[in-house]
Amino acid sequence: MTDWTHSPATVWRVIDVSNKCKAEAEQCAEHGLYRAACVLAGAALEGAFLSTVMVSERKLKGEDLWPSTSKDVLDWSLAELREVAFRAGWIKAEFRGQRPPLDEGDLGNAIDWLKWLRSLQHPGAFVRELDEGMELGEAAWSNAYGVLDQAYDALSVVLDGLVADYEGQT
Image (cartoon, rainbow, N blue to C red; front, side, top):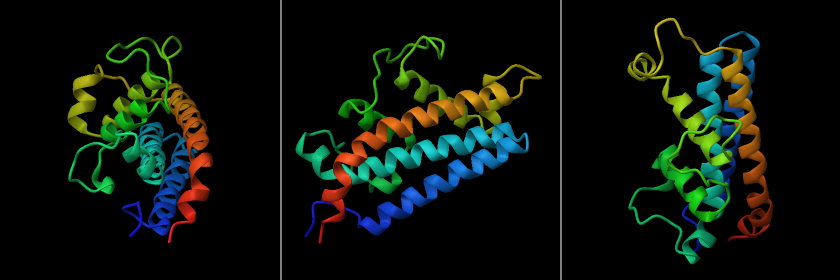
């Protein structure tokens, strides 16, 4: 028995899906479909968190950072995955519960913003959160992509330290 719930093949599939979401987000933005691009950037972020949590499972459990849930990690929400990343110290999040402007907060705040932005895929959330006539444009996409890149960079540091151990499992 291994210390991981899922095989490396499953993790690589999650990484592949996440990378496809990022590539599709870029394609949407190239065609001016910024709302779709932002939603897919949020999906790519979720995939990055998911793969990092999956590869880190043994370490997280050893440090008592694995949530006490009976749900399979593949069923965790972006909020649950993000919370693990914050508790593990992978993402700086000094302004929890606050909403400073993107350029004044930290990566944790920016990730919270991207999570919120992704929620605008739901018509009710879109109408509730944005004033009449507001749309997600190139600026929203540019910020979303910047947040995604920063998150990828932060999580790649974690993955780089764990992938060899994970791939060596039997």
